[in-house]
Image (cartoon, rainbow, N blue to C red; front, side):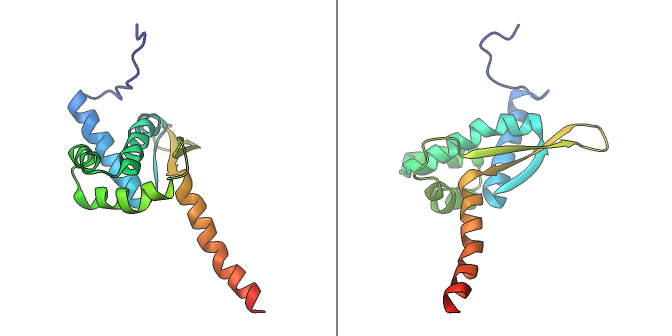
Length: 137
């Protein structure tokens, strides 16, 4: 029975699971949106949201905790300078999971996981040139 067991094991050992989640989190920070299986996306969401919380704190200890988990200094720099400030006004729920259906090869359920505020910033950036052209006319 799995009463009060919150960790999804993903059929991996603890060290393998930690490395997998760290790599997925690095990819999410680097690209803003990644396509993965639904189980991995659901396991990644709490990890990514805790990293955003560290990024919003912004102090040295939070940065060291993030480096200890992610093991990539350039990704931590991007997290603290770009990704976390975009979510500064939000109190939680920084990630969005969008189901895509099943993968053709093995029928695994697939999903996109992305930052909620990065998508908003991208649509605002795309709307700015259109608004500038309309104002010029």
